[in-house]
Length: 415
Ligand code: MCU
Image (cartoon, rainbow, N blue to C red; front, side):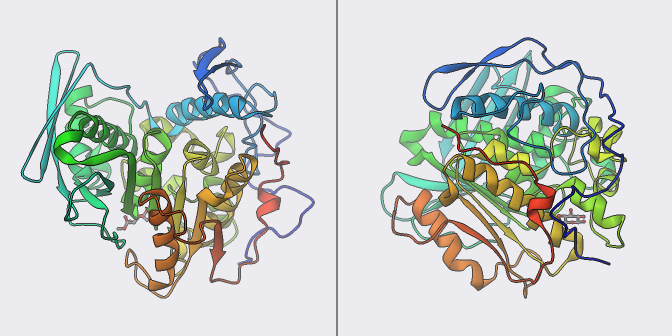
């Protein structure tokens, strides 16, 4: 197979031709909404159209609203982020419920116990906090999975072990609607597992805010990590929960740092990479709503570079492993190459890292990424401004792939 589109003149030809747009049915809000902005004000955001032409073969332009107007300011970017989040929830992730009416927490031993109630139902879950010695306040990294992080966590940073599988099961396709999230919201709730886990992360942050004096955790310095399927989860948590200060997805691959369109194009050209069609049968990570789009991902008004748009300008360091084609060797590189342009527009390139390094097994952290990871954790969680370079975009592969062909839009400097 070839190694990707190299022409810089035309968008990749994959799926439906752009001349025959498909109209997506949608019930999105069609009136303009006010959104809080990073500068503390509110911007009046343009309405999301009731329907739109969405057959796009290149990665969609994050700097153009669904209604066609351009994003030129950081306040408008906040509006666009709200729009992108709505679109992801509607078509792919399922609804991310707001903070429930009651969240309470107690801390005893190393266990933070969290109880949540809404609409007459309640659930409880707990996380284990492994703290550094000494007195806080400490930054913390929430780790997906109770077995411990598969990235090295430096001394001085607490680790919070989250049983994400208990929140939403991910055994296989039969896990749909199983887990505490669905005990609370009902087994037919639209959220896929990635969204349910992100909701769990939000409740952990709520609980940490309630128990600051007991836990000693500084809730302004919380990171999230996970590997592989749990790396997809860490990315979605960073995207949906703005209180996450540092997002560290490890080998999230397709469905995480990879873009659906690049994977579809690859598989049409002789590669074998995980794609949307396969992923919805393998597990319940996404909303059932996504099933309608997996055979023509060009219909989606977004792709996964725009998951990183939701994280921006907050720091993110994406670790990928090129030794497994299935995990999106090209698709994470191309997708995150496009994602980086969003940080560029925000003047925040020091907050974006993508690093693709092979020579190790899946989820086993390579020492070649140690300095990069320590720079990210050092700068953004340990308040060490001199922790190292964080403007990172690198692969150890010799890839023949044109990021600009796949992201042909111009990049504004947002004022
Ligand atoms: C990279 O994450 C997944 C991948 O999406 C699946 O296709 C595969 O079965 O499992 C990977 C994983 O979670 O490995 C632990």
